[in-house]
Structures are given as structure tokens and as C-alpha cells.
Image (tube, rainbow, N blue to C red):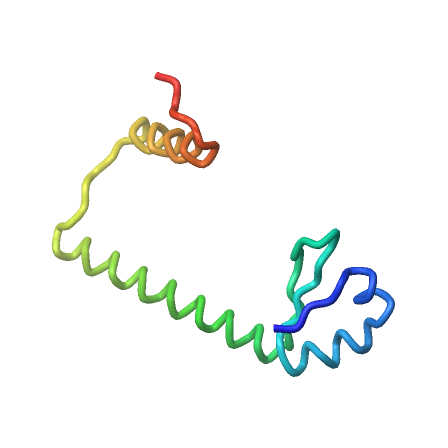
Amino acid sequence: MRSMSAHDAKARFGQLLDAARMEPVTINKHGRAVAVVMSKAEFDSFEALKMEHLRTAVQKGIEAIERGDFAEVDTAGILQFGDAIKAKGRGRKKAE
């Protein structure tokens, strides 16, 4: 995958668009990758793959429910589960 600095991407926007038609181009700012520019066709293909993955996951969930493979959770349980996920995302244990 080709890459260019944000400064070069701004200064050579037309070249960036031409390059992105061929392959995704990573844009770097201060030496760190911050964005990727890709062709519309490649983006559409990527979105279609994501949608297919989502459909498959939803179908698996429906099949699990039809098999009775689920657990009922009340509102308090859902909120507690959400708090635990947030705490894990912050890299620390939830205060009890």
C-alpha cells in the first residue's frame, strides 16, 4: 500500500486521487498513519463485505434463539454489563 504525508496529500490532491484509484493510499501526519484514501469501487466492495459479515452474525443469532440458546437479562443486568464493558475498555476494573 502506498503512503504519503498529509502535507503532500494536500499539495498533490489530484495525484492522491489518481493513486487511490489503483490502490489504497495511507495518509501520514507527524509520522503516524491517520487515514486511508481508496477508490469508490474498493470502498463499495469493503462495505458489501461488512454487510455480509453482519448478515451472517445476525443469522447465527437468530438460529441460536430458535434453538433456545440464550439467557434472559433484565434492564439492570444490561446496564451492569454495559458498565463492565466500558470499564474494560478503559483498562481498569469496574468499581463495585
